[in-house]
Figure 1 (cartoon, rainbow over the protein chains, first blue to last red):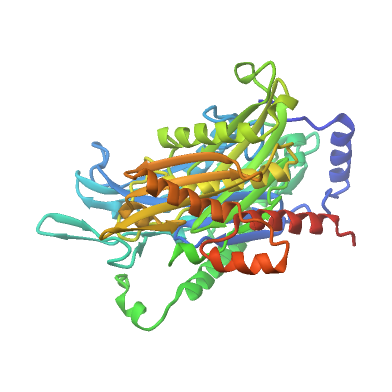
Figure 2: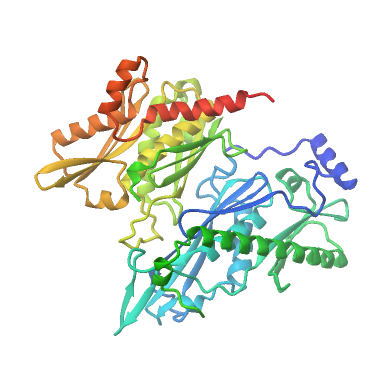
Length: 293
Length: 254
């Protein structure tokens, strides 16, 4: 497949000089995100996130499997990120690029290792049966800042997702189909989001949020901060690039917190809207198998 | 939800970075396609005299396996027939079909780690691919329209269902997928299940009525045709309308 075209020298100069004067090509502030859109599909667990021209679709799904032998009390939770040639012809099927590996590792650290999903609640029969929850991330259009968009999509999809209801009677596990019982949501503990900073200039003195593809190609360093709305940091990843001043990084995390609060609000608002849209009211509400915790 | 009553919907040029793209939803299936091409071919895909049509089908959940590879090979051979591949030697026309939504059978819990695509999704894949190819302005001999027909035996009589739901596919005796070019030629005929020649002929006629309905030119003829073939959507008209809408909005100059 063809290689991704690098920006030309004059293009590069233009972007960098503009950033030095605190200007961006699309007229945004340095710490401003592109117009952000989040929508849910007709099915449970499908979230579509758009950051300007970047578009990511996440789909959550679940099935009953056997737990890992070394973790008999835990369910299985996986995030699959495979970049298809749809995002860019430079991506090849079955040949992961560096972007893809970094993306999947960051999502893993942010969502899985921070314990956002309570995997113990996925266990059905210790050592024998558990839920395997899987999120597939599909990048439909890649115009920079994949990490933030993908993380938002994954969190939104998981919070929107409903798994089939189950019951155990006399050691017999029954998984109810959607026609028999209303599906139940996952036990979700907190919602972490990623905020990626890109640094420009010789010493990384200009910090920029939500870089586009062109900006990503000319940046000198980047740093991804994952945290939830309570300000609890899940991870900070700064992989290579020029060194950045520690005080500047602290400043970045402070700004990231305000952004994460905005994301949180957006997801909450959209989920509430979706519930309202699906609410059939009356008899169907009474039939719901979901109990208050 | 009865799948047959829904009308197809399409949006052309939905992805900003691809050469051409389309989103199509019908009968509960939603597919997004991107087309890049003609682009440089890798050594192993290179044909000296024609373009290689590279089709990738990606399920919404789970990893693609043999079923997807099978669908890909069917789509690849059908689409190579209508694309003017001889015009672009040593290059690749890359088609990626991403399934976003497929109707679920409420009565069965699905296995997901191994994605299982069913047969009835093929018309949606073909239709999306054709729309995306048109959007990418890839030269084609003809456009194509496709539909799925299921045959159900009830008592002694057989009934044909257009655009069957997963539940209907499961209970049907046989399922057929037909694709026709815009010159009314049969492009693809895939069948699954148990059927007689008579049943196949009936399915073929039903599918042809949907895919190859002639343009209503004279009012009198159109009236007669409307009475005869009200079952199922008019795919050719739909394809035309989708492209006309896109061209009209592209050419609209503020």
